Length: 127
Image 1 (tube, one colour):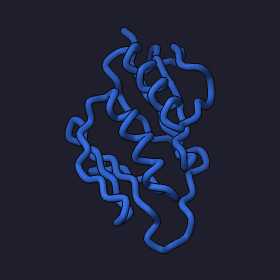
Image 2 (cartoon, helix red, strand yellow; image 1 turned 45 degrees about the vertical axis):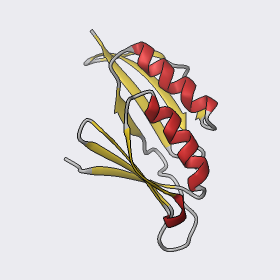
Image 3 (cartoon, helix red, strand yellow; image 1 turned 60 degrees about the horizontal axis):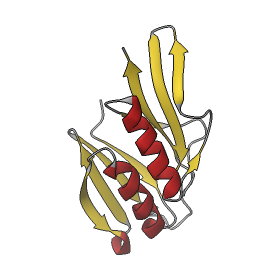
């Protein structure tokens, strides 16, 4: 289990625009927005998501193969999340939003890269 997820950013103001948009579609609450101090935080359903400037002064990098996933309430919510992210400076990646078949069932998925190239996924379990 985890208490929070944290991704790095090289430009907190750009990150704030992006995450305000995508988390706005989920009803997440901004917990802290202090780009001057190098920190943003959002809360949703008991979980926290943070965006920070690296403390060591080096550039933020992303995990190769790493993805942060969010559970959504419907395929329409996934589509709204994806559209908001693309409109706010993110980039669609992998396949277009839609259903994917897995041995354990069908998931409706959408993938984005945020402005700092962190990979995000919104998911709705179909049926």
